Every structure is written in C-alpha cells, then in structure tokens.
Length: 224
Ligand code: SF4
Ligand code: SF4
Ligand code: FES
Image 1 (cartoon, rainbow, N blue to C red):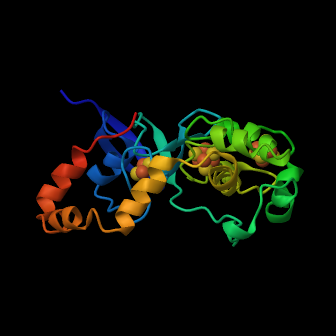
Image 2 (tube, rainbow, N blue to C red; image 1 turned 90 degrees about the horizontal axis):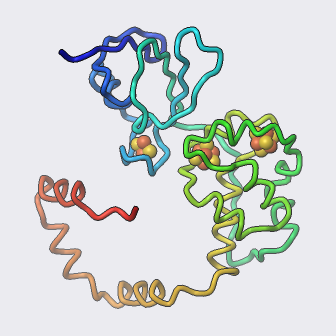
C-alpha cells in the first residue's frame, strides 16, 4: 500500500504519497505552480524551497524538484529573491583587481560565517568562490561557482548582503571572454548559425506538433 506523508505547504496541511518530490507533491495537492517551477531537473534554480521537519531545530534548503517529501515537513518556497543586480557592458570591463570592488564591494564585508556554503542547494563551496573573487581569482571563482543555479538561497542567508550568484556569473563571464583561450568549435558553430546553415532544420522542428516536441525534449541527450 502507498505510504503517505503529512506535509505543510505555506502552513496548510496535505496528505501526499511519500515517494513524491516537494514539487510533484505540491501539484498532487492541487497547487498550480505558476512561479517556482522550470526545468524540473535541478538545473534552472527556479524552485528553491526552505523546509523544517517538525521537532528539528535547523531549517533545510533545497530545490523542490530534487527533494523527496518527508513526514511532518513544513515547506515554504522561494521562487525569487531580490538581488543587487548591476548593469555592465562586458566589452567595457577588464579582469582587473578592482572590478569586484567597483561592482560588488559588499563581498569585502564577508564575515566568514559559511552560512552560504551550508545552505547551498547545489553543495557548492560558496564562501570559497566569494573569497576567490575578492582576491581577483576569477578563473577559480568561475570554476567553483560553475554549477550555481542562481536559486538565491545563499543570498537570503548572508549577513553581508552579498549577491553570490551574480558575483560568480561575473567571474565566469570575465573568464570566458578574457582569460580562457577561445573555443574554436564554438566560434565556428556561431558562424554556421549566422550563415543560416541550421535554418531548414529549425523550420522542420518548429513545424512539429507539440506532443512530438515534448517527446523530443524528454528524450534529449543531457550532458552528465
Ligand atoms: S551558490 Fe547560492 S544561488 Fe548558487 S546554487 Fe548555491 S545557494 Fe543557489
Ligand atoms: S554567508 Fe555571506 S558573510 Fe557568511 S561566509 Fe557566506 S558570503 Fe561571507
Ligand atoms: S525546476 Fe529547475 S531546478 Fe527545480
């Protein structure tokens, strides 16, 4: 017989099968996900959730599409967290020592509490990638932050009000544009697209019925 779990979404009680993820349990409970749901596979970071198991002192941080429900789980979702977004033109930047100071000075107020790392839904060493950004180690920052989904949980926890994922993103952009050697196969692929070499193939795909497109999407190759 299917085992059930008592869960609470935004404080309201539901009884759901215990083998569902938080996301599918919400849908099972009849909640229509308009925000806070994207790729459903742990990549897009749209589905951040905070939960606490009754009786436990500490809250947990997770992606709701990747986390199974548990009995007596109290869940709040965090589809969006306001960050300190900066406008810049990458073509006008250089990977200089003072670029982080200009754009994200708050990283120098990090108190080393490690709350960001402990809460990261992708188990990244967030404190370390911020430390790398502080000392101009853009390539290391880019590498450590590479799997960041921009879910925003670490920023919700940070006492120094750092927008971690934007710092990692800038480091990856600087690394890609100025530090890493050019990826010739990417440049060639971009040129082929610009020349229209894939136009016929795209037109063919665009003409397919929605069901066929869904099937192709579900069976697409995903890089491990
Ligand atoms: S670094 Fe922050 S924004 Fe990125 S995945 Fe981890 S918790 Fe989410
Ligand atoms: S949560 Fe903020 S202050 Fe604490 S270690 Fe991470 S970046 Fe530094
Ligand atoms: S829906 Fe994209 S990470 Fe969960």
